[in-house]
Image (cartoon, rainbow over all chains, first blue to last red; front, side):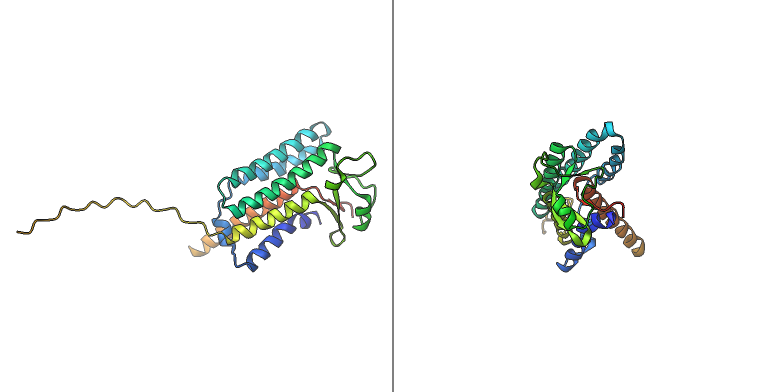
Amino acid sequence: MAVLLFAIPVVVGVAAGYAAGGSLRNLVATRFRALWLLWAAAAAQFADVIPAARTWVFVATFAVAVGWLAINALQWPPVLRFSTLAVAVGGLLNCVVIAANGRMPYSTWAASKAGLGVGLQTARNVAATHATRLLPIGDVIPVPSLHAVFSIGDMLICLGIATMIIGAMRNRPVPAPTTAAPTTLEPAKELT
Amino acid sequence: MTHALNWRHAATAVLILAALVLLFHVLGAPIIIVDR
């Protein structure tokens, strides 16, 4: 279920990319730099089972992901830059509310709407209380069909990833100009 | 040769798309049912 949920922006992006006349060939031709950073950040998340390391893992993984966005935004065309901005802003909103509360708070109303057990606590999520700060940017958007609750940041990240894929699938990288060797003109032969 | 290139493209596309799934996993924080 979780894998399916996290794959949604990618599946939607690929489908919309094809619908918009793009292709995976263009996606592959688009330069995605340092993809290993994302794999490393995802792998590092497993370290958050150690309570003492949780804050550092959280900060490090967010920093690495935002760093990856910055590295690529610098070399991408404007459409793809817009998508990296959406993902970065979404990530920042999630980061702020998690930093303010220790975990991502979720609205109990939204959780019951989505068919989730109220009071459920996960490694990242905790039920909101009166003491919760910045709840409007927490998990407050119920998605009953997925039994999930999203935040505004999650929505922005989904939108950004989907548009990143659409943009890359429609992107036709301009081939590097070939540096042709200067042609040496032979001196004109004098007609005798 | 053409087939080999196609497979390489397909593998690269899978790597890119999988990395973008991980990007959502790292930055996103939706709550979902984990114990159903």
